Length: 65
Image 1 (cartoon, rainbow, N blue to C red):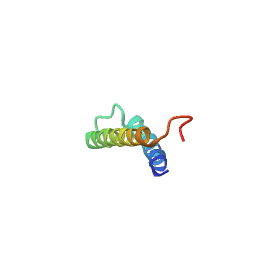
Image 2: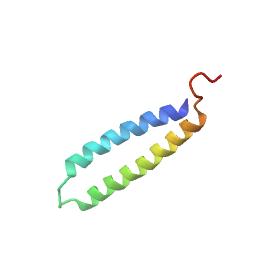
Image 3: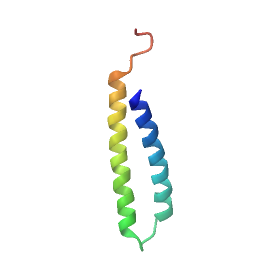
Image 4: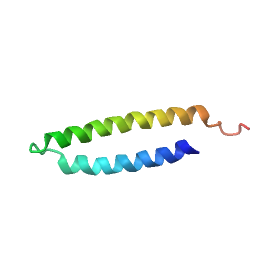
């Protein structure tokens, strides 16, 4: 299912953003990068919510045919 594939890619992107967030946490010399990483993380969170909502609507409950 395409939604599962998208979800996997979003998870990988979130992992890389987490690495960037940790690398730049507490640094005052690169505020633009810190803000860009935060914005990208927020956008990814919204995309993840959309994918989860889609999966909830399209996934059959256990036992349903």
